[in-house]
Length: 170
Image (cartoon, rainbow, N blue to C red; front, side, top):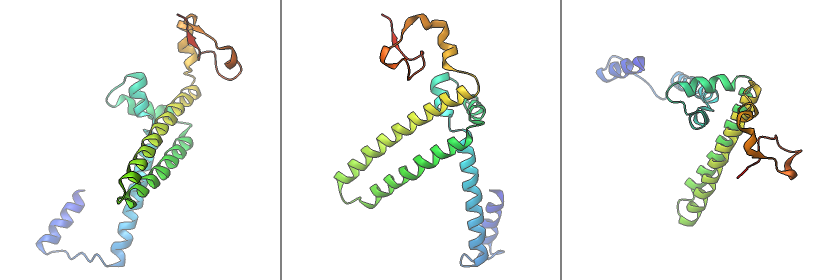
């Protein structure tokens, strides 16, 4: 950032001439863009569970970021695939909405679809959070054992889901 500010100051004073049509400037811009995109993707993958940690574990500040980085270890490829899936299709929905700004009905419908898509992304990150906790040996079953007497197992779901999921006895 400091280098860019110094270059801009030198350019404005007249010491440096920056030719934006130069092939060197184009390759420099492409290289900087690729490096910045790689850094953003790495940080997003590392901190993808921070929002879930804030809600589920009630942690604030840097604690959710550190907890997310710990939980994602071993599941980085899954986190990357979730990010790419929702990023690509969400971007396509936004692009389609942007292209069709002439119709309010299409824009409203695309906004509804995007809202549902973002809701699914939140659910996917929550499921990824549970898988990451299970990978690190922090199962929800261990937490539920303390108050497991309050749950009644549903008979049709006995084979499909863990015994933590059930109906609270009234």
